[in-house]
Length: 249
Image (tube, rainbow, N blue to C red; front, side, top):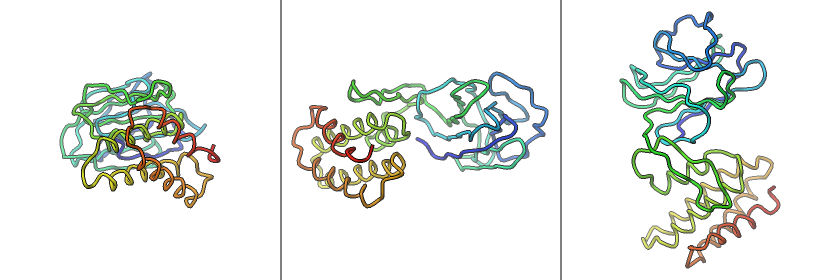
C-alpha cells in the first residue's frame, strides 16, 4: 500500500534515501546506471532541472511498473525512511515500521533519468492482476505476500490516475460484486464507504470539478449500486462508470 509521496525539484540528479542517521557527503557521487550503496544509504539518479521527481513510498503491494534498480536490505535504526536531495533543499521522513532491517525495493521508470521512484518496504514475492474486466486493463501489482482484502485491492486500483476510465470501471466492478455477495448487516455502510473512496479519487483525477458535483455523482452511484441484485455481468460497471463520467471528461 502507498504510505507516502512527495515531489522534489532537484538540481543535482541524485536523490538519496535510507535511514535518518547522518548522511555522508554525496557531492562526489559517480553517475551509475542504477541505485548505489554508500555509507548505509542509497542514491538513485533522476532527471534534474527539468520537472519534479515523484518519490512514492509503499509497504508490500505496489504497482508492477518500471525497472528494479535495487532489491536488498536497508537498516532503519528508528524504523523511519529518509529521503533528500544532495543539496538538502528538500528532506522528507516517514515512519515505516519497527526499528531494524527491512527489505527495500527501488523501482524507477527510467534507469539513470528517473521521473518516478518507488521505494517499497517489505515487499512480498507474488504478483497479482488488478484488471477485472479485460477491455479495461490497468497495471498489475507486485510485492504481494498474503491475500488482499477488498478494501486494499480498491486502494491499489485507485492508487494512480493513468487510464482513469479503466480504473473507475474496475473499481466499480469490485464494489458491485462485493455488494451483491455481502449479506452482513453492515453491507450498506460498507458500500457507501467504497463509493466515497471512489469520489475522493475523482477529486484528484478531475481537479476542475467541484466537490459538490462529485458528491452528487457519488449519491447517484450509491443508489444505482444499491439497486443491483446480480453483479456477475461486467457491463453494469461500464454502464455506471459511463454515466458517472458524463460532463467530467
